[in-house]
Image (cartoon, rainbow, N blue to C red; front, side, top):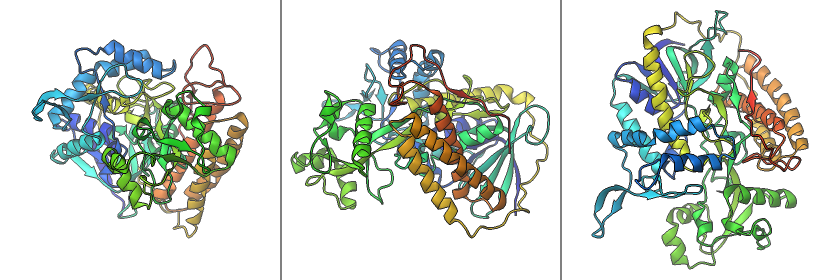
Length: 537
């Protein structure tokens, strides 16, 4: 049966942001960390690159800030960028203290030195990416998880799906304070009531709203949708970063084909074997991500293709196996020998640059409700995220939110007994095919109409379809027992609507938002801010 539980802090999401915050609070507070599947299901675990930070004496905070502002195409909030970059050295120091095994420089004799190995990525003017080989996210996640598992005040709960936030406004009380959340226990099938002094949304982004994505299945925009329904503003939802080359295969799901292949001479080709990138940019395959992604998207739409091809088979087989063992082995598992044949690829939604509006501590428009990590809009990413800034944002804002929570602790009591979830008016559905059909339709029209290249007509078509879907989903949600698939579909459809509405409001092309009807960039850069009509149920 459904249970009532109370914690000092409820953290929804178990990635780098959520675990960082939990570890900073656990010496003083009881913390519950909720994961809707396995704890490792979020995007942090799969992050390959590293963390951007000012760690070298030849680098400066000003240089990192300037690089970020340029990448953000005029929309970054400089004060937020400066706050995050300014805390980067301390944030990395804390990760090192936790035991994250960052890669170190090698001496001439092959032994490790005390200095960390720093790499350089696109948009950065210095070597400032600290990493753990090519699996930095896994190294950070595993280290933080081990620390959390060892702490008696942190309860890690798997297979729990957040249904919605509980707020004083929804209960008809004065003000709008977050009191906790309703959480579906997937093992029991019941919806439990979690009361908390503070609630933190650390649920990641919303790239699953697109047909092709590099993200895990969990990236369904849950935190953004729940915050919106609770009365929070969202900003810049039209800026979705796409990675140009994701393996196109029905069983491959979200496997990225690293840009390093193109760096080593791989060529993008059409099904007839002809190249197309030289027609779009003098740098051809070595053009920036957004240009390559738009070129692929253009050719796929022009010719009605399911994918294009990335070909490195003209290189020696030994060279390919030595430099790209992971890609070679993974493709081989799907019957594709990249030493002999091209790789079918499509662009894939990669990162949600917009999100829930927060202040410098991660606090949202709703009292006692925080949003951190990819769920939030801090002003760091602007119109285009610079490589390896996202993990840094997770750590810095996890720490900032924890400090604010501790400051507010004396005035924050646990909420009174909360109403339990009412299951009396719903029944089990025998029409789950509706969920799977709507899920497929949503992700398909978002890809076709609200993807890499947009037009006003495409956005209008998408808005018409999402309105119909939202009505269908609301009726289904009101009458049937909730499930993970239904909750994710409900959230995805709402986030899709926010993306479409934001894209329709931006009548220019800037950063990741490119529209054929407004190809020029306006002189003045402005955020796209959406205000919910009111907190609804």
